[in-house]
Image 1: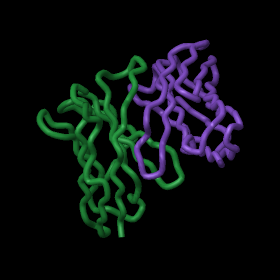
Image 2: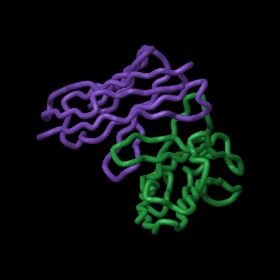
Image 3: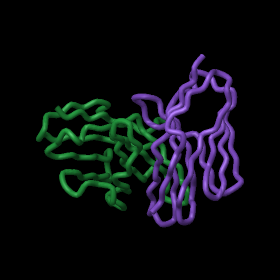
Image 4: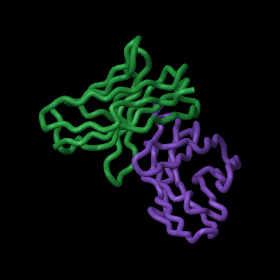
Length: 111
Length: 115
């Protein structure tokens, strides 16, 4: 069964303090790994899709990387507006067409 | 382009009533997914539908819950005889195709409160 584990559960940073969020996954045949951002009371907002180990994607202060067992979301010089819950999800060959989500990492960035 | 539209955004039901949640996918998307998010928990898959077909309902509770995606109109998630434990945020997502790492795009959710 496909599984996604995110760590840490919560992360508190000072503005400008770079860090990384981890997503460990177990999947039989990775079709895609996804990162989303979710603000309180809102739906998840798509950030990145990664397909194979070694792939990297960037958007503003965010950079997502992928290995065969985990993905990292690197946040460079975060700002308070980056505060949100970041969700990692996978889609594998044996899960049908389900996208399975981790529990998320709540990021708090203090000015 | 309009994104995934869900309504109502907030719904209050008394125990035993029915809740109907509607979802219109992104224009051109023919695949719809429903997820449930309990307070302080992650997104849990419920059901995957194409037009007029349920493809995967492995995450749907066996009783009281049903979903449809008719040829015309929005997808509907129906919860009969609601109980307090059904209180949650229900998110709909859509994609142009299924599988092969296709990204799914979410609506803003419907928040159900059972009193």
